[in-house]
Length: 96
Image (tube, rainbow, N blue to C red):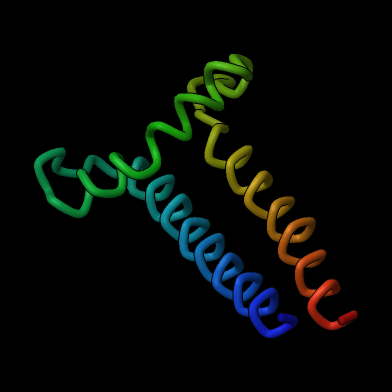
């Protein structure tokens, strides 16, 4: 049973890290003028924009001086989930 919990923790950590990089690339790509019809840009926006919109909905102050800080809030949330959930699952797996 402990191997299953550890495997879930590792997969969850991998997914969170992958999404973290998607958020970073999506934020960086907004600094240039990307082609909105590019499939990579469309994918990045389709994956990240719903999450950014939720953050903007609950925290309207994340747009300061024309800079959208919602990617930073999302990255902080990803890190907190990784530390809390994955860390606890790993501790549970090693404690069994």
